Length: 470
Ligand code: NAD
Image (cartoon, rainbow, N blue to C red; front, side, top):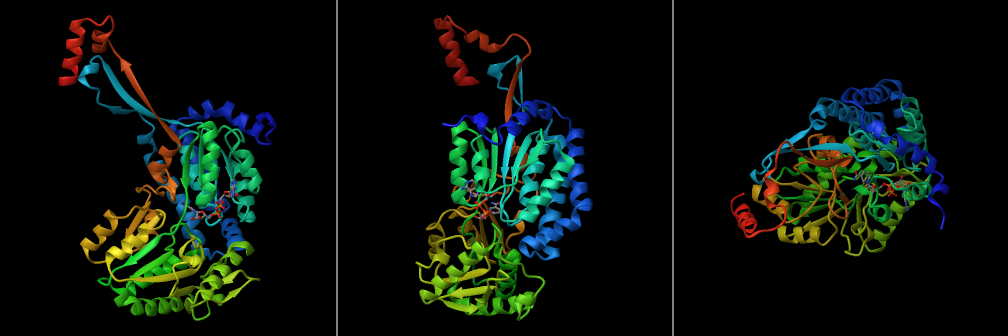
């Protein structure tokens, strides 16, 4: 068995470990200064470069980069700056009468040395987002971004080096082996964003050291559409949410469950909105992204081939080009229940449409799968919406829209079971990187001393009275 000291990242980890109490004791102003430095780097110094590398790595249109990466990070920082003073002060709580003579409070103290492992679909947002929370909470952090977006990872490494000492924040570039080595170290907290399968590997590694984890995972997020809504408007939102970043979004509507009676109207509206957003020639549209790597391109094409081999109907799209990693916005129906598109998270621009006859059938269908990260419901009918929410579980839900719940810093963001453990964003992100330490202060003689041994019959009566009255 190799010694932990032989781990390639042991020295870096040890330096952060030594430094952790110094970083933990940074004041509100010092933490805000760090966040300001990060904000300046992203908002001004590196902004153009960020947009450029995102285009190189993902063909991300500039407007999408600005809104889903730059704006999100800046918004996160601004929100934390406004609220951090409330979160880092003592949180006073009541003390029961049976503990007369003492007072109680708890504090959010930093967990210590944290590992942040991030994916490729929103490289900056999903790396700097958790980092901002880690810094606000007073932690040190080692970051491992995705190897799939190398230009973004290299630029993030430059930004981190520019702002932080390695003893506080360091970014390590590398492939799976790098994560594997890092995961062997006894971090205090591991914050992982990625697929459920790798999430299980991360949790297994964390268990060795009993490190706490935040797992921001994915899965098949359903959209359920009731006949009571304006179908044209529902289709508009679904098409926007689905084909943003070419469907490579964790909260992307994975598949649609539509009331059979409005299925044709919905499909026709979807086709019109695709043409409206991306023209009749999406390949030439500068509003449409590309697939991240040749491997993911092949994975998505094999989904299409599998569906076609099982007699599915491609309503629109289906065209693809390996050289440019382009897959047209695709809508597909008449799906056999064994088709891979209905089994695995799609994470690409293919939208399967499944019809239902009764709401119970739709709910059963959703519940036959793992719990999703998001569930979207479109209906004007309160009963319909409540029934869906009460009889399913999901990390988050939008009613009559999709994706946008991600952007509200006041809401917790994260999954449940297969789609994740723990929450992020705003206060919830700060909390993920903090330990709630309970503190009781004894001011003078404490009532509990009446119950110290030796246990006489008087103390037995006192114990009974305590149970009854306090
Ligand atoms: P991934 O799980 O393949 O990779 C994520 C990170 O883990 C990368 O940095 C990668 O290098 C590392 N990694 C990969 N295999 C590993 C292994 N065997 N051991 C240790 N580390 C390993 O995910 P991805 O392809 O980058 O991203 C897509 C997935 O992420 C989708 O499932 C999506 O839903 C999910 N996701 C979730 C969120 C969220 O906030 N919940 C956000 C974005 C993406």
